[in-house]
Image 1 (cartoon, rainbow, N blue to C red):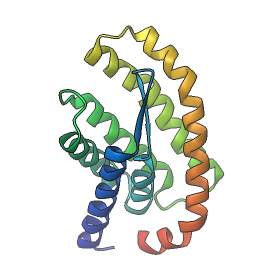
Image 2: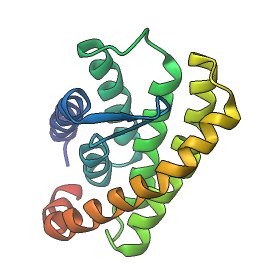
Image 3: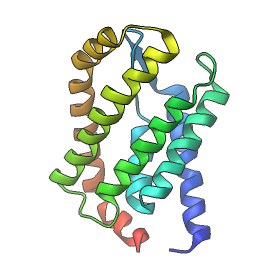
Length: 168
């Protein structure tokens, strides 16, 4: 795939992620957000690779905040978005979009980024005790992980052939 095509696809997936971040993100218990930005990030990372996945994550976080800020900007959440895009690409780019790879991508991003790193950012940004953040996330993240896993398994079954065609 040419660099122009990659840039174009990255722009499209970034725009989709921003729209989903602005209109389809929900807050639970003041510490846990659930939205559908993972869909374009994961598909874009699977098509373009981990580095482009990180770029999509960073740009969608910054642009989403610029359009609909929920407090002052904090770079930590942008770093988390970069890591998520990178993890998705590391497990799904040029690999089969099967049960194991999707499970690994979702599980790693949920445990490392959402549970561990984002808990630290919430503690730093809001001053919420780390233990309280961690416990509240332990109650919601398994449900969110299952939703992400099922949605992406179904979506990749539908899009697998197209993604493979464009990833070459």
